[in-house]
Image (cartoon, rainbow, N blue to C red; front, side):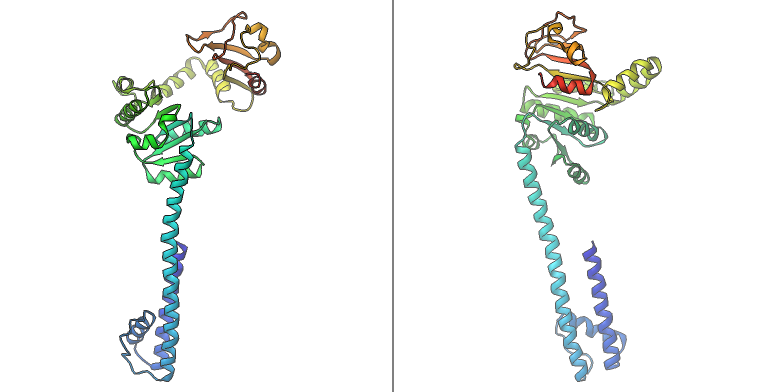
Length: 328
């Protein structure tokens, strides 16, 4: 934009300089002087419309050189803008596709609206890899500025989903604005990968959740229902809600509720909760245990044995949770 404004100002200055020069040197009218200036700097060669004295011809030659220089400058700037802009965009897309192609066990976020934006923020803060699919060109730059991987296109398109690495993805989250689009995305994604975890946003309209589940979604979330429930519970059970907020949203500070996967290399594999020393050595409470295959056990007793593949839900200080992670 600055180059364009500068070029316009420079052109205007040359035209005014040339017109004033002819008016002073040759005593011509404004229109004749302007015309001579215009045909001189554009080098069209229509000939002299006013008789020129030696000084006038010298001025014309000088004006032609200035005009040629301006034209070459303007052409170079236009070429630079077009070529570099297009080349940069092309190289940027190629680089982005290469990064996406290297993803594995990642998440695909379909839609970067208010909900999609917050989902990406939380995933990024927790070190989860993901790629965004967005059809609105106006949002692409904003996504890139945040450092997220993005593909421009419709998430209902199989080629776009394949380009986002759906075959190697861990899950897909459909949060575009309409239920119909989310249904279509779920259908397409399920057809491309049968064991993919699919979460979809629902408007809360009657029948929307049922259709999304039929389309292949594993989990359907209605932000409006959750918001209404959360506000009502804040009135009915304020202390409980404050506790949940503290444990879920505290982040790096204070009390935290976290899930932790028990690997086959865990130091307390096949040990009971009591023998593991989680409560004694780490000052953490195991709220629940979800076996790899089976129902979740809430408030497990001290004799409950932990196996590889289990997921522990623990409550405690963030620092102690980090310590426990090293043992898992």
